[in-house]
Length: 374
Image 1 (cartoon, rainbow, N blue to C red):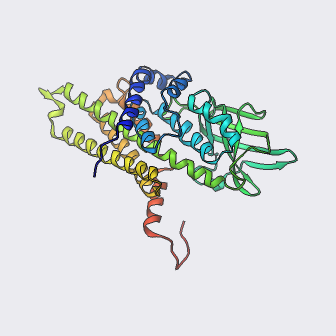
Image 2: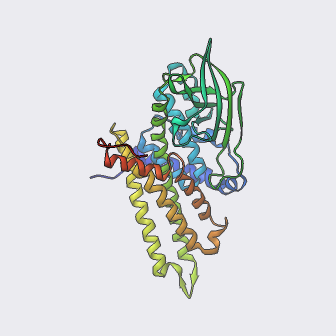
Image 3: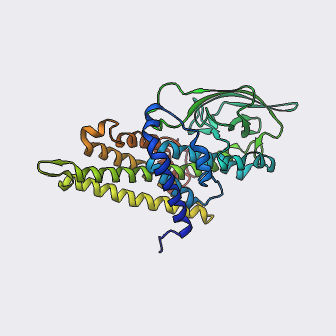
């Protein structure tokens, strides 16, 4: 088995790392502290080719890992822009929809958001209450979305709503009258450099606004989440890499009782566990990405990668804070931000509970002899 990356993939990873270190690293702390979404970064990401939905899954995962190592907020933006919005348009859009938006999204000239989640509908997309009603000359959408990444700055929304035909997806320019957005109440625990918004919709749309056929919205949503979960899992690998690097550096420099703290057995054990989790998580992500590129079903591999990598990142960040001691308990060092960001990864694009349900159901199969549970 040859696990070496092809030269083209190595070049993509190097390009993402260079941008992350040169452009993201100098402003990551300030962006987090002040809750700033830096829109000026978007064309730079586009110019570097990091927003292109046509990239392979393996390339996408490498980009997410490199960006996640430095700034999870920007990694999250890229996953939404290319993974959710770009792929949805490429896979389901009409030629007119693709012509209008795909080039601009890839270049970073326009920003997209993926408007699925509602106050009472997150993992359970079938509980969506936003309503799509046919009119004489098109459609009318009415409802509310929340926790929509990029929602406050987007030029385009992919909005999911309930129609007579079933759950449906719509291409909605945010300049459409009746498309209102406002910041989420409160302050996020992590990903504070992202833009998260509440959307209130009462909009009239043309007849060609649906993305895919009316009633295909569940398929559209699930196909996008496959791309999104890969980005989250790979981004979590990047967070764990950052935690390991920061903790090794600190353990070499910090001295107590006359020696480096890295010379104490418990510190060494923690570092060894972090390094092992990192290697295992990276392989799980690459397996899931390889399967997608090969055209094979990667649902199980993706659920395993999302589950393991996000929880490994959280474990690693927790140990990083503990080893940094009081320094890790403040934003003097980045490890406290890594913990806050890793906690969010455990929740969105399907919580850790949901990934376990997916895996358990695949292991057990359907219960053909009795009532279904849950």
